[in-house]
Amino acid sequence: MIEMEVKAKAPSDAERILVSLGAVHKETLRQEDEYFQHPVRDFAKTDEALRLRRENNRTFLTYKGPKAGGPVKTREELEIPVELSIRGILLKLGFTPVASVKKIRRTYIFQKFAVSIDEVEGLGLFLEVEAQQPAEKEEFFEFLKNFGVKQHDAIVASYLEMLEGNIVTPPKE
Image (cartoon, rainbow, N blue to C red):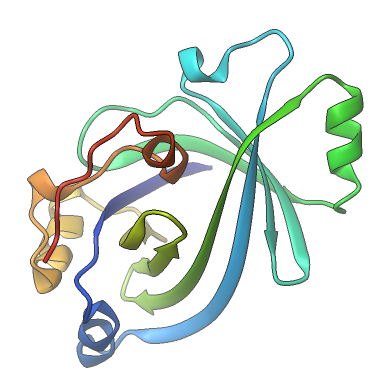
């Protein structure tokens, strides 16, 4: 599957704005994402990621391919539900845990988008808008105008990259 999303700093009233637009709350999740390094391939150089996500009572293993350029982050994403014991298998195969990202994610559905308000430990409040159907770049930013987000406010970096200090995010009031 090809993932298309835009991430930006969220205003403090993001949830109120979503509800006023008629977005429907889908779920609230506590997520912990643990990222792994391949034993012989440097994911930082190849712009790939292997993540083990624990959310509530579910676990998912996710591969993310290199990001395509532009304000709308587009990349291949393959995800499967797994048992948490997969972590032991990854370790036995030589994968190394490198970092974790903890967040509370409140997800809403609005038209063709899944909109997440993420409270990321150590980073703050973010909006992630992901296309659930084919969408053009302009559609993302037309929707994001409701939050005062312009195209130049888009953050292509992952939360992991931001936590590692590799990226400076634009401020959002």
